[in-house]
Length: 341
Image (cartoon, rainbow, N blue to C red; front, side):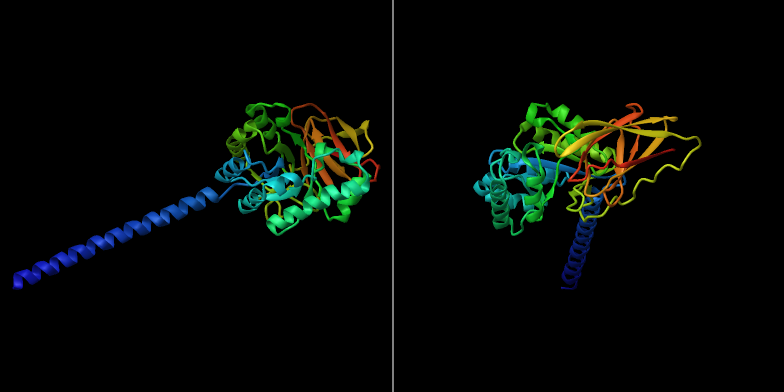
């Protein structure tokens, strides 16, 4: 009887030890999984934030795949939906919201709004506001005009509806038959604060998502939200880079920045700046609100928190750079100054 009791005690002790080991292994595994998850979630955003935008959704054939691709690559984007598509695919609008995307207004039927009267524009925008609010519980704060066309009448309606107009700095050309490689290359030009135009419905654009994510990571850039104050990309919480890149200290020598007029339209105009005296220049461009720079070329721009001061540095394209100003009623040229660094 004693041997049997000892045997039972030994078996119980052995089982207890095995159970303890199993629990310890499970705890270590769970802790490792959490740590790995945190490691994957941590991103280096020290170079800033860019705005990934997708127009013309949601579409039954592609939106769900696009959302999956973005989420699986740790990206968030702004989806500029048309009202008609939002009405026909309300579950997909909610899926956009639930996937952590931001939702903007892209008009009801994608017309040339600058050819319409104020009442027609009001209807295009207001109906879209309503259907998106019905689907998600919140009305959009951002608006992208179809074809990037805008004028004073449209801006007045936007203001009445509390909408911030968002154009783009980089056009992926996916709407024009660009290949996946070309779309990835376009996204590779994005700099802090800039916005890229893409579309919801193209297979090439969908296929570009993993490569865009990898490129941003390699450059310490993160996908951010678009500020309703400036129309520029900022951190998802509305802040700036976690560790903003520091400006180079002023160096020896001097430089001169000369500004010249380029093309001009009813709502915007181009300017170019030529720098002489140094190849290591830093040009500061100070806008007069409510002006906004909507495109740049031949330089690497960065922005202050107000969105009114642009700092341009060389990007290997020479000593002349250009930019497009959406004047918003103010035609005054910005002031420019140059220093070496």
